[in-house]
Image 1: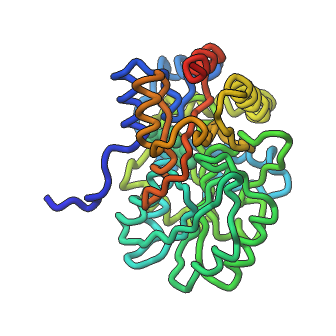
Image 2: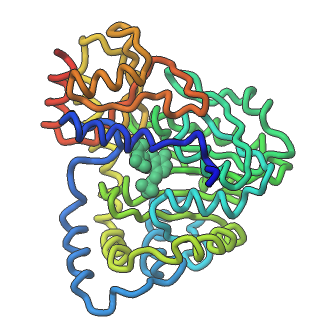
Length: 383
Ligand code: PMP
Ligand code: GLN
């Protein structure tokens, strides 16, 4: 068989997790918490797992009560935007991963161009290419990883079918500002290009930085697919439940693909999440995530301070980028392998987030970890 993705190997996250298992290194590579979802959510799952009748296919677009709960919470948290209609604008997917794939399959035709900011989450490029699409990359410069809108303008053309944005951004944590959204809206005005806004880290925005979704910009809302993930919002990456919010005509197209991709998502899990998303407690949880992760960020930065790492600013998300040029002249991949094998800490080399392997001398740590894990990792890294 001739591979459709001959240049793609096992993802860097899987590679580094395997290396961590092999070497006994502390895994700060793959992005996942080493703590469990809130107790109430686990109890809800147990309850629904024991409820007769909750074990067959959920409705294709998702359980109505989960979609209604999402619509209500989105309306409460983004009071300046109209609530999404749960019947026609919200689709529950198997993680944001499935939503990304469903949107790209629904929208991108052979030869269509998709604008992608780099560094970029590893699935974007291959998933675009599998549709016959052509990723057009625009580099975000360290240390702030802010888009240069003049550079973006030079890449957008009538062939641009979709602009893929990710805010807060993996791996840098950069957060789109109101100006960025405005520039994007201006750029797309008069075109029929769509926006895929990957907002899986939506609640993880620090230091009082205003958080804003594509849905809050009226001109963008009409042309955007907005994705989120309960993996991130409830420390439940293994549950693989996410969702896509988009205007009805766009949602129709996403569902055409979703119904043949997974058809529907795990029923008891959706029930448990619908319970968790009710009212004040769920808003308090969502609003509390920023403080919870900001504290982890600050703790991890303090633990590494003065040890030769140049720690880049982290406005959002749960990753810390670090420049290591004062510690080693190695490539980022060689340095990441050295850290796992010789220091006992697994990290991700940021070159994995560039289609051409661009190596800017940066590695990524995931700080979604218990204090004890962060302390143990920092002690190893300081040696
Ligand atoms: N987008 C980004 C930017 C991510 O970091 C991740 C998870 N690592 C995903 C999408 C996938 O989310 P999920 O686990 O819900 O499929
Ligand atoms: N999103 C996670 C990360 O950036 C990894 C998810 C995966 O392994 N596919 O680390």
